[in-house]
Length: 88
Image (cartoon, rainbow, N blue to C red; front, side, top):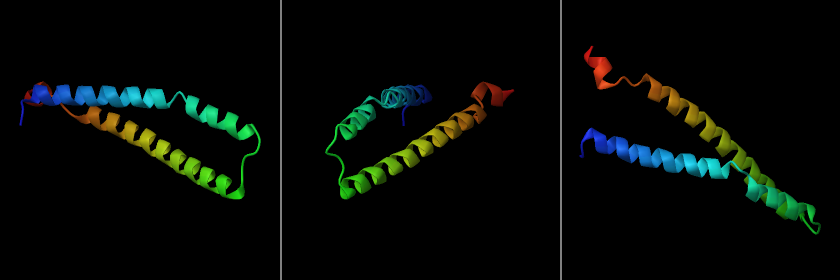
């Protein structure tokens, strides 16, 4: 495996990409558009309502799980000691 520095670079890139994706997702513009569509009339049949509600409920659970995982990952990261600290 590559040296530790390469690991840091890989994680830096992945964390930055994830942070960007979450920030973009957090803008909520797509869901605002969905609300506009729904309020436009002719929407919804009972089946459409059931499907949409199930998806929204599932997305809400996933967002809560991501938020919880994000907090735990950050807390765990703070517990990791650097080599310099361990050598002391």
